[in-house]
Amino acid sequence: MSLRVIKLGGSLLEWPELSVRLRRWLAVQPPAVNVLIVGGGPIVEGLRTIDRAQQLSASASHWLAIDAMSLTACILVELLPEAVLVNSLARIDRSPGGVPQVLEVAPLLRAEQGSRGALPESWDVTSDSIAAHVARQLNASELVLMKSIDPLQASDPQSANSLARAGYVDAYFPHVAGELPLRCVNLRS
Image 1 (cartoon, rainbow, N blue to C red):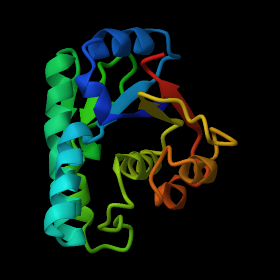
Image 2 (image 1 turned 90 degrees about the horizontal axis):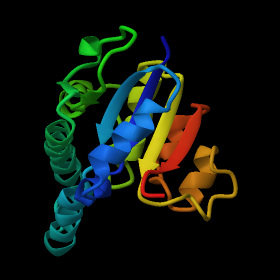
Image 3 (image 1 turned 45 degrees about the vertical axis):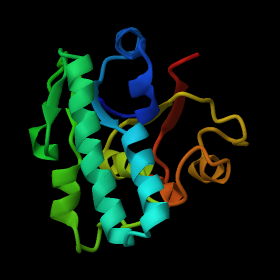
Image 4 (image 1 turned 135 degrees about the vertical axis):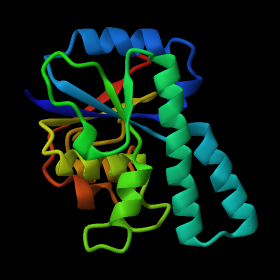
């Protein structure tokens, strides 16, 4: 069974149609184990505002944003009750026909902290890079970047470098995405 990592943009949490549209999208996809990672959305945007005013350390800002992703993961499970919240890669159910799984990334990233493979503690690393990092660890067959926009300025929407140059993903994304099979989806369109 193939495994698909879906990075759900946090801005979609504010959209009333999210759960209906996400269910519809999942229903027409080829069979796969679906692991969802939710961006920080407006919660992290609030942290960015505080960081600009207070000049927090890069490490503090990074970990506060990661903690915010735990909140958004719980919000998605509330909106999509058939989904399950998992907090480690080992707990991901790879059985065919399973329910969507929402990964809380904070425990995984905290366990990696200080190790050679850990992501940098910086605003250059967002949920896009985190999803690519997880997709590589899971040997995912596909990484879907599900957002509220199309990658209009990207010359090649399946190239990590092109997506980063266009500002569709964060600056660190090409370093971690490598040659992962990518697909960009504007869920609102």
